[in-house]
Image 1 (cartoon, rainbow over the protein chains, first blue to last red):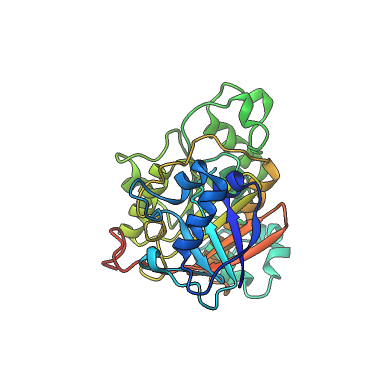
Image 2: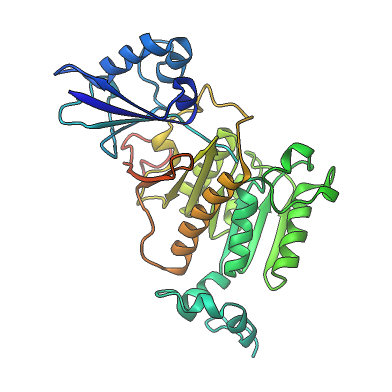
Length: 93
Length: 251
């Protein structure tokens, strides 16, 4: 299935785009997709998305079809999801 | 006619005549604005235009919180400043501009940023707080104090060509710590900014605050309003309270 990923903030700067479409396999989780993008975008992407233990950062907002995903980010299902939005924190004044 | 608590003066009716015609606002909403105190921290690219719009709307009192002096690299976005203010106290310059724009509102200046030492007192003096600070440490202080004192907080932020606004009503909505449980490790004090972007986001924040104070409908509670000015795309992200939030879980 095709998944649209929206990137915001520092993550959009690292990726060099605010949106991309990726093919994901049935049963893939958010974490699986992020690990796949890490292979494409490298270390800077990884720093913004994963903490020192390889878990999705607590400060990364994961939004599925317009709704913030609450709770454990490691096991978020993508079933039926069309748009995954990844929002890094911003505070510019 | 003199101002009285629940009525507008003839002077205010004349100044805000066009605004009084906004459906849902009217004289009652304008009185609420006039009787309110709004705190804005800080008065930079976001906070400056935000304070200007609050002054235009007739907020009764503004408390401007910002430490430091005006530098040349502030001038691409800090629209309350002027070149001849360079090297001067930033918050005094902002107050001077605002007083010229609307001499009928009260303006208090605090020439320092939010700290552990002043946060409780500053929030106590306001009915609503507008967060336009560039550092998460300050933002978390404002959030914590607003939650403790159950005051609404309009959190405004921008980066590059995008920005976001989160209206926070303690006990009703997610707070900033629900979304970001710790200081983001990779956020940097210096960020890319075009003044028009910060002013746009500031005015979204001002509108959410004005709606909240004046009792208008349509406040975006439990929503993060995100605006990408490159694509000119506005999105309202549904956000949720964190039941384990260390700041607001008891409310």
